[in-house]
Image 1 (cartoon, rainbow, N blue to C red):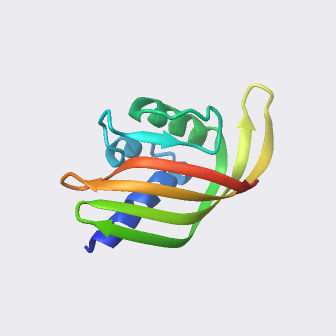
Image 2: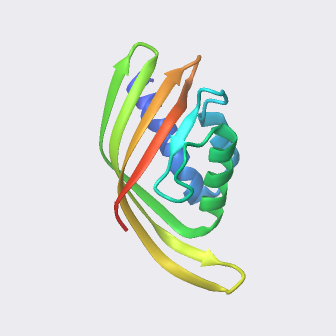
Amino acid sequence: MLDTEEIIKVIETLFQAGVTKDLASLRDIHLNDPKFSSFSDLPPYDLKDYQTTIELEELRFVSISDYSYEIKNPKISLFGNTAVVALELIQQGMLVDNKAFTGEHMKIIGRATFVLVKQPTWKIAHIHLSKIEG
């Protein structure tokens, strides 16, 4: 498999976790290292480490039913064992409030930047998600 195919598969695995609720895969695709960082389009907006990112992703995906996503116009730039991926992202689903038994449809149109490193497989080292609308 080509590096570019592997890289896009890693990123798809992240969002597929929201579809399948297979949250164990999240730990496999992120770089478990103090160098890992992430910014999100949802609060809290501070720079997060590996563990906090995993916990927030798990919480986000279990809170959204009927989750779907679409990756548009990905640009993958390779620099040796480092890759930068920029893409447009559409995420949809039903935000579920289990205490009130209510739901609210959400659609987030945004952009995302990922930095991946190959050690020995491709892992996400940094994520930056920004909302355009939604």
